[in-house]
Every structure is written in C-alpha cells, then in structure tokens.
Length: 397
Image (cartoon, rainbow, N blue to C red; front, side, top):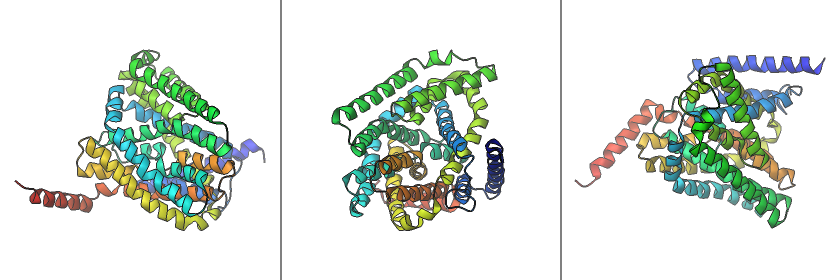
C-alpha cells in the first residue's frame, strides 16, 4: 500500500477514535487527556497494533500542539500581568526547583546511576508540563481563576530556567568544554532577554502587524509569527513553549481577542495530537520493570508540587481552595521531562532512565488530571471550609 494512503488511514482512524473517546469523556464529566494517552499506548510500540506510517506526521503535529496551547494561554494575559506574577513568584520558583529536583537526584544516586544521571533525573522531576497544564486549565474552566496567574508564573519560571539547564545538561552528558557550555547558556539567555523585551516594551507595535477584523490574514499571520519565534527559540536551546507564550503576551486588544477565536479549533486538534503522540512513542513493554520506582517518585513529587503551588497561590493572596487548585494543577510532567531523559540516554547515561522517565510522566499526567478535579468536588470543598472555620475559631480574638 502507498505510504501516503497508509498515513491517511492511520491518522483518520486515530482521529475518529479520539473523537469517540472525547465524547465518552464528556458524558462521564472527565478530562479526555488520559483517554488520548491510553489510545496512544494501545497503538504504540509494544501495543496491540503498532503504527508506523503516521509517526513522523504526528510528531510534527504534536510539536505544533504544544506551541498552540502556549500561545493561546499567553493571549489570556497582558505583559504587565506577567511581570507582576513573575515578581511575586520568584521565591516560589526557588522552592519549586529545590523541592522537586532533589527527589529525582536522590533516586538516581540510590539506584547507583551516578551524578550525571542525578542531574538529568532532577530535571525530569522538577519541570511541570506547560502543555498538559494549559489544556487542564481550559478544560476545567479555570483560565480566569485568581490562582491561574500564580500557576502560569511558576510554569514560566520553569521554562525560562530550562534556557540555563538544558545547555548545562548537554555540556555535562556530552562532555564539551566549560567554554562551549557557557557560550550556549549565554546565547540562550540573550535570546530570552530579547523576546521578553519586545513582548513587554513593544507589544503594541507587534499587534499592529495584524488586522483584527480579517480573520484569514490574522490566522496566518499570528500562526506564522508564533511558529517562527518558537522555532528560533528552539534553535538556540530555549523552550519553544517560552517563545510561543511570549508571542501571546505581546499581542493585545482586539487582535489578541480575535486571534484567540480563530486559533482555538487548531489548538484543539493539535493539542489532542500531542497527547496521542506521547502515548504512541511509549513502549509499554518497558514500563513494567520501572513502575515501582516511578510510582514512589510520583508520590513524593505530587506532594512537593502541591506545596509549591499552594505557596505561590498564597503569596498571591488566593484562598485555601485556590491554593489546592494551584498545587494539584502543577502535578503533570510532560514534554520537557521526556526531552531531558532522551538527551541523557542518547549520550549513554543510564539507559534505564528512559523507561523510568516515561512511566513517571504517564503516572503524573494521569494522576494530575484526576487530582486537579478534587477541589471542585462538593465533599472536598466542605472539608476545606470546615477546617478553615476550625482554625479561625482557635485564633485569639
């Protein structure tokens, strides 16, 4: 069978399956993310019927999905809101790095994988998934919640920190010179600084590049600019997600409002593909041996992310329920964790790191999707109110 024909059959069958699973998720009032992941696992390496013709196409679509998730998230906020959140979340960012990186580093050392693997696994457990969390916030209708800017601030700090971390990790695992590593970091920081400066100081000029009322040119222009900036950022070892998010921040007014409308259907399509592709590229047969270690690591770092998010939300003046929502929303790890593990394993560092990281990411995505809904449950809200009332009663008058 012709390769293009086979690609169309595979992609069409997968999209149809995702549609049916998405409808099932709506019926039972659940996020479709775990269903997409499980569908990918069923037809990925080690699954029922592995698919090959569509893998390259789906990989590209998945990358576009993350970019669209982040640019649309950026369109929800202004540059001043971003800076305010970043300033208030600086301490939370440090706490986030320490609490969530240490468990990964400690496990790698306990398993006898050595210090280089410890640095890599620390990154795997540290950074949350911007793509997964952006979809969660949208699915749960929390984009306008008071705790959401605090969540985004932590995510942006993590993604910006990756501009330092990834070049350093590359230098360590590949064994390049200190000068080469420092040069990579300097280039990455310079690119981030330029993008931030344009987004914060000259966003109004960027918005003038587009006309708000003509939807076709607006769609093509904003999508083109987003992919261009994301690609340039990726080229110098900066997160494409950071570039896309800052493009969204730079746009304002009716341009941002209408761009959000025209890009939403594309985001829904490609974001769903991102989660599907993640499952497709996971060899389920290799995960079983690493499940105990991954479960233990996930249990510890779910608690540490909860502490991080709650602290960031409390610093922003958010109430107890909002603090729970913030902490549980930060649980999923994703694209960065897999990139970090792949970088280390590709350089010959602890081959078992790949299945451990994959199992860990899958567990945190599924657990995070479930746990993020807890604060909306009536019984949970009642317990939180009861405890808050008990604390208030014990305070001195």
